[in-house]
Length: 85
Image (cartoon, rainbow, N blue to C red; front, side, top):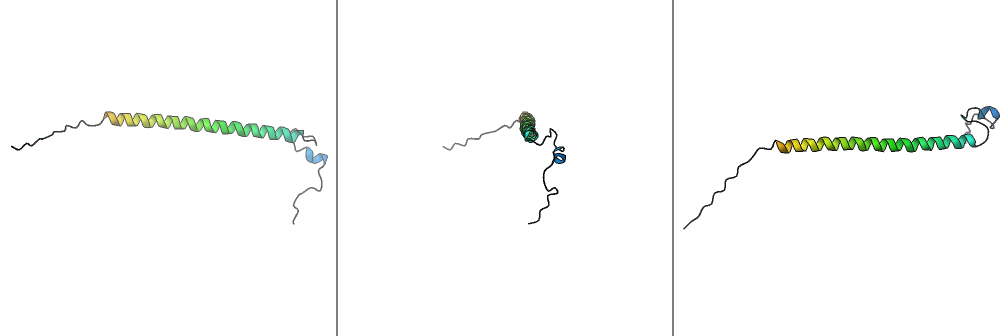
């Protein structure tokens, strides 16, 4: 198996890449929590956006349907009854 990991071991220089970086697990936990919160917030906003777009489309279709019903032509029906004696 080819090992492409560029570092032989984790050292203090590598931990400086972390935003909250010390060599402990606190930075990883904080970044994970922030990532999960951002993901959940994005998902909630996406659902709200799509719901708003669906509500607007529903209103547009209902107004188009009611406008189409208002322009329906009046049809007169004549009934002829034939009686025989």
